Each structure stands twice: as structure tokens, then as C-alpha cells.
Length: 159
Ligand code: 5CA
Image (cartoon, rainbow, N blue to C red):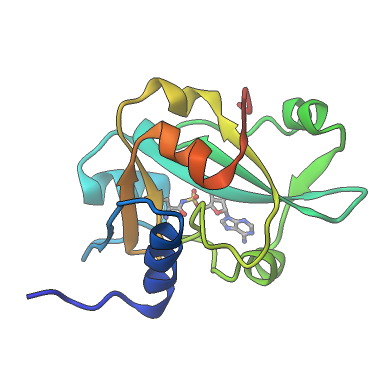
């Protein structure tokens, strides 16, 4: 029996299909709202969770997607140097408006807008990682190279 994905998770599954990526969104009974919860629900290490975090350019007001390893904290100063613009954490409304998804389930693909994207270099050291898929219960497994392919993001030191 196959259970239907919730609409937000379906959007992510469709985005993956459109990109030609044979990756499968799964919805878990346990919460995957935070990196720690996701790792527990999946049974992986927290560092294997690819957190999709939305920041905002302080001058441009443009959204920036930073995909960070679950155990890392984004160093805003370092990222500002990489981007050439200071950034700040975006609020929940800004995140929903620019991604089309609510905090706790922001996926790295299928976002409402294209945006500047940075990928945490620490994720590239791992064989297998997991990303959110639109809801606080939905995730998909991928390899770090997939993340580069699907987002076109720049890999760098963000922590
Ligand atoms: N589903 C999991 C990973 S599979 C997940 O989305 N985790 S997360 O870490 O990427 O997303 C939660 C993040 O949202 C937090 O780390 C935090 O940076 C951000 N966040 C939480 N509350 C707010 C808020 N009120 N405004 C802006 N960002 C927030």
C-alpha cells in the first residue's frame, strides 16, 4: 500500500522528478521539525541533516538559502564576506513568502523563487545526507553531489 504524501511534500517530490532526480520523499510518523528530531526519526547522525535556512540580505532585502550541516551554526560574518553583503536571519513570514514553505520543513528544491544558495562544505564530506521535504514530517535521502546539482549552489565554509 502506498500512502499519499501531503500536498507540500508532493510539491517537493514533483520538483525532484522535474530535475530528473530519482530521490524519494518519505513522510515519517515522528517529527522532523528540527535537525535533532529529524536525525532521531530517521536514525542517522545530526550532521547528516542538511538544514535549509533562509537569510535576508541586509541591503538588497533578497533571500539567501544556506544549506548547513545539522550540527553547524551559520557564521553570518563569514557568509557576509562570501556574498559581499551582510545578512540577517529571516522571519517566518519572509521565509513563507519567498519559499512557499513553512519553517521546519523548508526543502532545498521546489522553492517559490530562485535565490542565491550556499552549501556547507562540511556536508560534502558525508556519503549520505537527508533534507527536509516541505513539512515537519517529510524528508528525502540524497548524496551531497545531488545538492550541488539540484540547487546550483556554491560550496563554501559557512560555519
Ligand atoms: N526539517 C528539519 C530538517 S530535515 C528542519 O527544517 N530543520 S532546520 O533546522 O532546517 O529548520 C529549523 C530552522 O528554522 C532553525 O534552525 C532556525 O534557524 C529556523 N527558525 C526557527 N524558528 C524561526 C523563526 N521564528 N524565524 C526564522 N527562522 C526560524
